[in-house]
Amino acid sequence: MKQVLIIGSGISGLTCAIETAKMGAKAILISPYQSERSQSVMAAGGINAVMPGSDTDDSVSLHIKETIDGGCNIAGERSVTALCGDAPHIIEWLESIGVVFTRDKSGGVARRAFGGQSRRRTVYAGASTGKQIVTALVQEARKWECRGYIERRLGLMFHSAFINDNVCYGALFYSERLKKLIPVFGDAVVVAAGGQNSLFGKTTGSALCDGYAAGKLFMQGVTLKNLEFIQYHPTTIETPQKRMLITEGARGDGGRLYYLDGGRRVYFMEELYGDRGNLMPRDIVSKCIYDAPSQVYLDITFLGSKKIKKNLGEVYDICSEYLGLDVTKESIPVAPSVHFFMGGIAVDIDHRTNIERLYAVGECASIYHGANRLGGNSLLAAVHSGRAAAQKIAQEPPVAKSPGFDGYIRGQEKIISGRLASKSRFPAVYIKNSLAKIMNEDLGILRTGEKLASGIESIDYYLSVSEKLLYDSDVSPYQGYSLHPMLTLGRAVLTCAQSRRETRGAHIRADYPQRSDDFEKCTLISYSGGRYEITYESED
Image (spheres, rainbow, N blue to C red):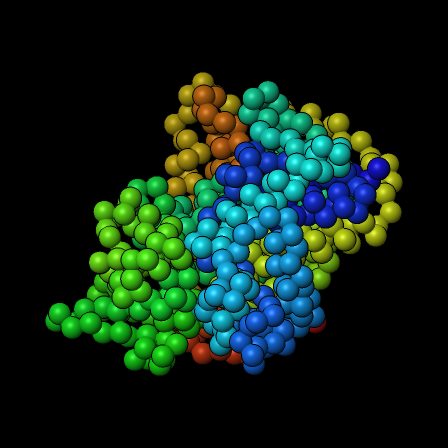
């Protein structure tokens, strides 16, 4: 039986595992923690699809157009067409495995408006759409586990891929419990490791998504794409641990943004863009909030207590718990925060990377969103990409016998053990915190060549010392060995942003404020021997 190794067990990883099992192959689903702790459960707002009963003048072709337009014309038409065309079937499948979507008065799935879209096509499950989907996928996966087609392996953290002559044969993992490296081989490897949140410290996403997998694979020869395009969600609140998301569904249901000018409310988005100003694409809303002269608030009080608690219950609970604020009576103080990464591992329409037998799905893969993602398209891409990769893998013959990697494994074990000290003056967490500070201060919403160059210089210093440091033995070796690839990834992000001398979507250059036809292409970046090489290519 063909064996597929899947790294990550959020929505894209679970979907890939289930589809792999349906195709008659065995999925080895590996992650540090249970699926219920994945970032996928945080997705609140909904999933886009043109469904029966949608606005009468809506269509799949319009969904395709608005996805490409929202991505500022650099996402490929072929891949976006596949994504949007699959959307109605994905909703039907999710319902068939137990996802309970909110219904409208006629009994059909309810839809709300989301940013960057002219029609109401975002299907949702209250304010916990991601949680509902994860729950249903976990239950479906367990059925296939009982039949022997899915094997769950928890407590393993990705270390590196087994790559030889441009072919991937499996991956190496670190076990915190066993304190050792564990190899796992397969006929294909699918990376579903999420985004790069920890590069920026406190974001709306999970700190478990730290970008290490993308950074390590980049150093192993995997091409990355569009790293400069980082979406800031316009409406988040501050908590001691992270930024908490105030779902776009709040604005989709009618919420209004404003700031105070001498006690007068200024509904600035509506003044700038008309009735749908609060639902402009996220890059535009975030930039407008960033430019606002005072604190920005989101008002949903007029929706009424009943509707808020039914459709936006998570917003009500979050603000009550973290701010002591009753959103049925008071406005919410909001600010933009890093939320989603359009860039990541470069893949084709079948989610293949430039390394044979190595695939990437979900947020860690870059293909559908171009320079900016439409709200509601991330959950859609997570499910679609998992299915697409599994279906392509099923068409491939089993891998030939893999070359030996015993020497590589022994070498990595020696490196890890040799860098542990009983006490170290330079804890890895200090440098990771410094990296987050650099990324926030020198990248940020509004960028300049001068700040980007400064950030690159700072990261280059840490890269020059990171491989020489010893790490405390009383913390996880992962904190040590993950440092250099994370710094390398941060350096790559800054390099892509420095190279793109224009403003497009989520990439805003104060020194190049206009969009340029010369850059209406995707950024590809590769790494070899410490060198970063950038090329630009158009997608089909």
